[in-house]
Length: 141
Image 1 (tube, rainbow, N blue to C red):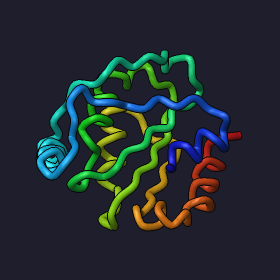
Image 2 (image 1 turned 90 degrees about the vertical axis):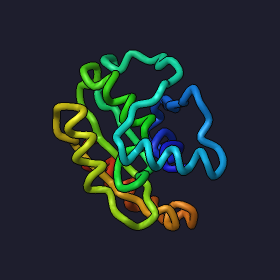
Image 3 (image 1 turned 180 degrees about the horizontal axis):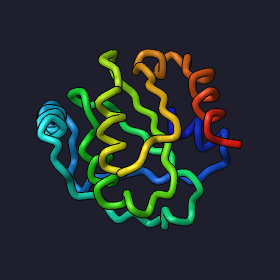
C-alpha cells in the first residue's frame, strides 16, 4: 500500500523484493522473526534494475522483531554501493523504527535523506497520506 502510493505520487518505478523461499504461515512468520533478530540474510530473486541510474532510491521495509526484514537487509548488503541517495520508510505494529533506520544507514554506509515510520493500523485505515506527502517533500525538489 505505502510503496504503491509513493510510486503513484512520483510516477516512479517499483522494485518488489522477492525471496526465493516462502515465509507463509505461522512457521514462516516465526522463522522470519528469528532471521530478523539474528540479522540473517536470505536468497532474493534477481534485482533487474540498475540502481545507479536513479537519483534517489526509496527503500521500504516492515519492522520485524525491531529491525529490518531479511529481504531488505540482503538487498542493502548486495546493492548499497549502487545507490546514490537513499530515503527509507517502514511500517510497524507500534514499536517504532529507530533501529531499522540505524541498520539501513550502516548497511548503506551513508545517511538516509528522509525517513518516515508508519504504524500498520494507520496504513490499513488509509491515514498515512499526509505523512507520506511530508516524507516525499523533504527530499524531492
